[in-house]
Amino acid sequence: MKKGRLKEIALDGVIRQNPTFRLVLGTCPTLALTTAAASCLGMGAAVTFVLICSNVIISLLRNVIPDKVRIPCFIVIIASFVTLVRMFMQAYIPDLYATLGVFLPLIVVNCIILGRAEGFASHNPVGESALDGLFMGIGFTLALTAMGIFREVLAYGTIFGSDLWTGPVIGVDPQTGATAYGPKFTIGFFGSNAGAFLTYALFIAVFSAIYNAVERKAHKKAARKASLAAAAVAVEEVQNAQ
Amino acid sequence: MLNNLLVSVGFNPEPLDVFAIIIAGLLSNNIILVQFLGICPFLGVSKKPGSALGMGLAVTAVMVITCVVTYPIFTYILVPLGIEYLEIVVFILVIAALVQMLEMILKKFSPGLYSALGIYLPLVTTNCAILGIAEKVIAYTVVDGVITMTYTLTSAVLQGLFYGLGFTLAIVLLAGMRQKVDKLNIPKSLKGFPITMITACFMAMAFYVFTLLK
Image 1 (cartoon, helix red, strand yellow):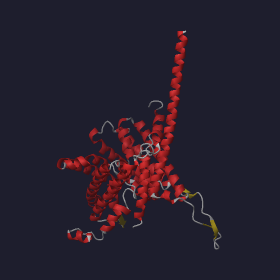
Image 2 (cartoon, rainbow over the protein chains, first blue to last red):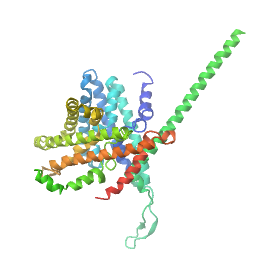
Image 3 (cartoon, rainbow over the protein chains, first blue to last red):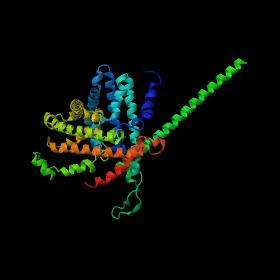
Image 4 (cartoon, chains in turn yellow, blue):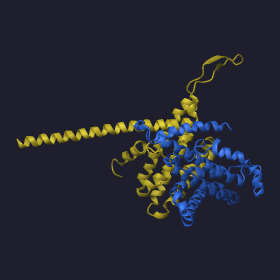
């Protein structure tokens, strides 16, 4: 692998081609599962695992699979790994299995995975494909978890399931002596379906605004450097002429 | 009344409530705005009402045929053989083959319909709404190792039809709104996906009222 390729793949996966905020792929689990940050981490881990495995296998078989039937082949490879993940979760993490529900088998038709198989793994060597899968997965997980934390905090006042704040004290339980709390102040809208769309829209807008600002700055810097260099050349030419 | 009609033509929809399926499929359990399945075409193919309608009808057709085919495959092949865990692999292959076949049949027998729906059919294969519904209608309970299906075949097919029509309803409504919204003067970073999602946000709020119908 060429030097600097790792950095490029990592930057592409997490920022420049972030599957959730830049490419807007795999929107269904993003909207449906971001009500709780913990299930976002679980979904992200499952998708990352399937991405790495399918990228590796597809990259290994890239010279064997005939071009005409490549999409069905890719889908079968992906479906096998999804079945593996599903059986593993059902056996060892039943809580997460129940939370993810139908969105676990639906990883098969998640456009991120087929998109990376088609766009990267089918014409790149194994090592790079594995790294691409890893960083795309990390980009997806980070994006999902950020949205999950945002919605969970606003809608339920919790983070990864533990309370961030409590309601006002309304008295003391005479029998147990425990303090009784009133209802929490939360914005339930963000837990609803409409809140999911709004949160996603805001995250994409803010992400692309920041991204474009940084890009513009980098462009300006490069342009300034180029113009300085041109000026230096011009000065040199004038001096040489004299 | 619809139940009586179905019985008279030979279907036995008991204990199935057709009216409940219609309301759930179109409104209270709308596949896009309540269940969050099939969001990619919902955001991607909703620029014009005409193409949105084409996409919606293609999804509905494939969804009905998928339910007709996958339900018997699951109950009469996978369950007796004890290989239910292969459902994802089998279903996705069946859906891909069905879409391909539908495309070929339409091309041969109905070029007019093909030119209207044809371009949307390949997109339907990787649409999670189809696989999601195929997974939903084969819901089952296991008691003492015996698998009992939750829905009958008739119910499964009707659900496929009305969830598909619910998809069409949502995508056509969004396309109608986007005709106006896309012309507005809005901040640059909100253009494209974000403003479409904010529009969908208002639709989801409206559909939230229907979820109280249950």
